[in-house]
Structure formats: C-alpha cells, structure tokens
Length: 195
Ligand code: GTP
Ligand code: MG
Image (cartoon, rainbow, N blue to C red; front, side, top):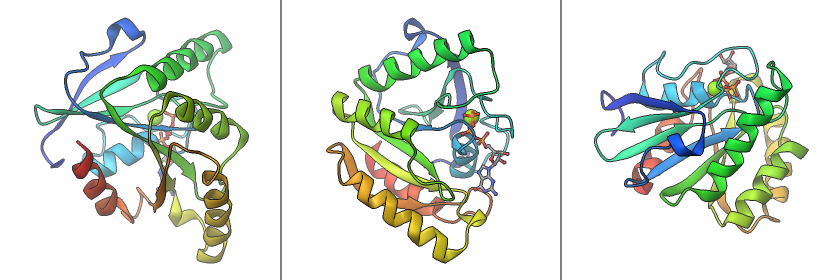
C-alpha cells in the first residue's frame, strides 16, 4: 500500500493548520533523533521523503504524508533534547501534545524507542499523555542494528515491564532497523490493517 503512493502533503506549525480529520491516520512519535523520519522513509521505500539527520530536533513541524487518496502518515517533531532555541522547542512541544491528545482520526500512535536505551523519563510523560487521551499506542524499537542480540533482549524486558503499567499500550512490540530493513514489512502490514 505504500510504494509509489506516498507523497508529502504539508508541514504544520499550529493546530489551525492541520488538514481536515476526514481520513484515518497513524503517527510516529519519539525522542529527538530516535529515527522517526528514517522509519517513514524505510516504510515508504523513499529515501528523501521525510528529512532525517544526525542533529536532534531536525523535524520541527508536524509533517503530513498522503498514502493514496485515503490516509495520512504523520511525522512528528521529537521530544526531549533538541538542538534548537528553547522558545522554538517549547512551541513545537506544545503543538505535539495538542496533536496527540486531540486528533479524532488518529488510529494509533507508534512510539519509537531506541533499542540501545529503552524507555526514558521523557518517554513516560508522552505514554501517560496517550493513556489520558485514550489513544492506543504501540512501541517500535529502532536502530536494532546498533545492539547485540543479548543487550536487545534485556532492553526489551525493561520495555515490556514498563508498558504493562500503561492502559493505552498495545502489547506487541515491533523491533526495527531502518538501516537494514528488519521489521519494516511487519510494521507495514500492521499499518495496512489500521488505515
Ligand atoms: P528528529 O526529527 O530530530 O526528532 O529525529 P528523528 O527521530 O526523525 O530521527 P532521524 O530519522 O532523523 O534519524 C536520526 C539519526 O539516526 C540519523 O542520523 C539516522 O541516519 C539515524 N538512524 C535512524 N534509523 C536508524 C537505524 O535503523 N539504524 C541506524 N544505524 N541509524 C539510524
Ligand atoms: Mg525527524
């Protein structure tokens, strides 16, 4: 459903700029630099579609991508540390939270967690916000290529334990590498069942 069908629609800096909620969407949230934009590129098979970079805070708008005529994929600005002025960061963090708690047509939020680091305090804050807003979220582990299998398992155990405390969490965790392609077909299939 993705290949050749996905296009950039618009970048949004205020709630008033959101496209009408007349079609289903899924979004990608996570700490700055966790790999949200890279994941969208891997899913769509289009390398430069969402701009990825080594600088935390690269994505500063809510970016909407159309999938065919009927759906949106949404690339969110990161939370946590960002290499950008404080006032600017505060503005987009507010927008991020407003979006996550108030978007009617949002089918699921994919929350990306770095395979090396697991769930951090800043992640917990977003997970609790999603609980309160009753938005189902699913964890996607990123950058699996950067960790050894044994370390990955230990982190996954921590993530499972933390997720058990969140009522809005979808239990299945998807392990991915945008670099190597691991888990990408699985995630694509899950998204296809949602939107
Ligand atoms: P912000 O927009 O700043 O919040 O970041 P982001 O979450 O969109 O991260 P982005 O996709 O820009 O990736 C950040 C860095 O991680 C880039 O240098 C990517 O090349 C790298 N990266 C992303 N995914 C992977 C992966 O699966 N494996 C490896 N090794 N590197 C990755
Ligand atoms: Mg980004």
